[in-house]
Image 1 (cartoon, rainbow, N blue to C red):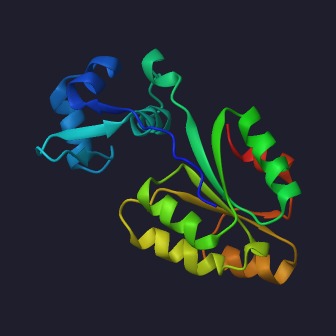
Image 2: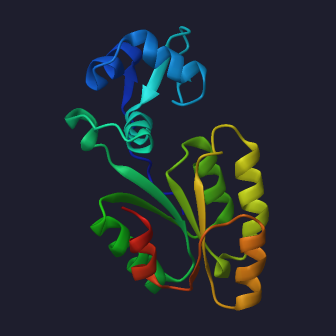
Image 3: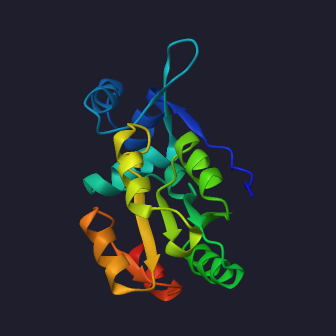
Length: 183
């Protein structure tokens, strides 16, 4: 089940510079050095996702401009249990996230690669090797910054995922612990 993706807002470098009150060359420098992700339009022009500009402000300790403060953050959730889906969705929506639910691991992976969210939450019940998924996402430049979080039932699965670099591994179905991770 692939949910409809929300339309992303793309900004010109000059718009980002004006919002952040910096010179456009500064924004261009951030893009070229990898501090700010940018897309190239078919005409060869650089465009920045509003959510990426907001993330740069937050990570660098800069004030978030009002135009960017309303940008919705997105989390993809791969969970097969309907009750757990509702619980996670409610907790994340309360934190202001757009939540896209998936039951099929491949649909979730394709959607995450196509438009990378802030995080991908995977349940170990989904029948997918979470460690391999995290490794695949880190290899791709577009999804490298996507956090991979996991729900695990047993300690051995949790320790294996922690060794694979998945942080944190949460108790299965604990939506409250998940909500505390996001500010």
